Structure formats: structure tokens, C-alpha cells
Image (cartoon, rainbow, N blue to C red; front, top):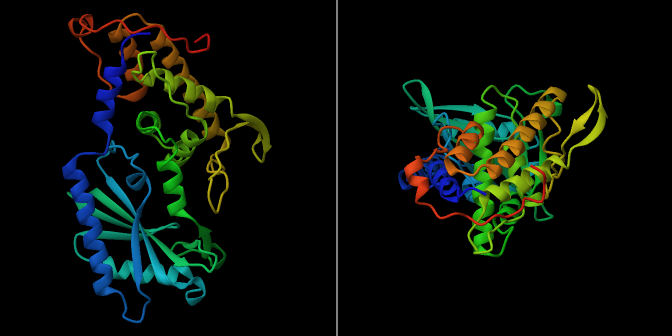
Length: 336
């Protein structure tokens, strides 16, 4: 196996959403919006509390290719969903409270999205996810757009905090957890690079797939082997595809079930063509990882990997790799 762990970790450093300035900006935008809600919401509305959710909270965020940074903020109103039978009515009040100069605000099906623009292009966006409380201890998330028909406006049971906990505590060993998070970020960037024209699987689906099928891999010396961990994970995901008859005919599909309420298959909205494309791209990634494993020189392996992960995966100079120690050979357990 070529010595490419250094390149993987440099790639991770380049794509990880961990720049202090960006994190500070996201925190600032979050605070500004919460302050606007507290100041501008109708006084007869129930009080609310907020929490971070999504990749920002799970510590799996990546730098977006388009530069449009985002953060998901849960807003829990201190009331039962019966107080607002139509969740869009409450979402409109949230929209109006934060719809001020310098922002564009859109009511989307799962949230209220606040875009911060620069030169007519979105620079940051904050998704405000609206919840009410339930007697069973779960939350109810408000679904529906402003122009949705009545049957598409509803409250749905949800447990977002439990989901964050499950993802964040998937491994108890710090080294295992760190590799798990790195590999999730690698796959998220792979998704962004390979699906520039749309049809990509949901980011949360890739994260849940890691929770279900990722296994850490290390060299005998204890050094992490991200190349092997990725190869094993991608191979495991491909093994989950099964033939199924749908309205579009027979084809193979991958199902990734949300492990908390409301459950459901996170891949169910992908069409036959999108699923086939996803499977083909996963096979190409698996083959590229296997090819990189079989290369003798790190620069040759990294050329293969760069085609999958994009320009942030750097190819080292020969003079640089000549100084690297030769990594011990570890079997992938496959012919690739």
C-alpha cells in the first residue's frame, strides 16, 4: 500500500469546516437571527428555545464548493402542535420576524431558510427548523411550503437531538471516532464533486450509512489507514444494494433508514436513473480506491484519488514522497 495517509489528512484539513473565522461567522449569523426572533416575533406567541443540528452539530461539516456556508438551527416553541394546526402559519411568523434588509427568506418544506447575499450571490444561509413539543417527549417538526396544499401541511414527530447524539457517539475510542468523521467528510466532498449537476444522495444519508456500515482500519503500527477504511466502507455500502420492483421497473436500490423518529428510507425519493448513477459512481470510487491501494508510489495513487475527490486532494512531488517511509502492506480482503 502506498504511503498516502499524509495526503488524506491534508485533504481533510482542506475540506473540514473548522476555520475559526468561518465558525465565528456562522455563530454570529445564528445569534443575529435568534435576537431578531426574540425582538420581532408577535408577543402573543409562545416562548422558544434553540439548538444546533445537522452537520455543524455533528462535527461532520465540509467547506462547500460553492462557498455557500450553512448552519441548521432548531427552534422549539413552548407549545403543543394543536395550538397551530397549520404549521405554515407559524413558519410565516418566523419568516416575517427575520425578513429584514440584507437577507432573503424562503419558506421551504422542512424549514425557513435565511440567505445572506453578497454581489447577488448567496454567501451564507441559516436553516431555521420549526418545532413544537409533544406529550411523549419527542418534537413535532413543521412541514409545508407557503403555497402547499392543505394535505402537505402537517406536523411530524421527530427526534433531532437523539440523531445528533447517535452520530456523535458512534465510536467510544477517540482514534476511531476521528477516522469515522474524516471519512464522512471525504464522502461528502466526493458527493459534491461527482454530482455537480444534481441527483446526489442526501448528505445525511451518507452520514447514516457511515453510522451503519463504517469500520475503522489501522496499520499494525497503530497509524490510521483511511484509504483502507474508505475502501471497506464503500464496498460495504455497495453490498447493500438489492433488486426491487418499483413504478419505474426492476432495478437495484440502496436503502438507508433514519435510526430515529420518524424513521423512513432516506433514499426513497431518488429515481431509478439517479440510483443507477449513484451505484455506478460508488463502483467507480471503490475501483479507484482499490487501484490506489495497488500503486507503488504515493504520487501515482494520489493522481487516481484526485479524480474522485477533486482538486483539494493534492498529488505530492516525487522528491517529497521519496523521503516518506514505506508503509507496511495490509490486505484489503478483496481482489481490488
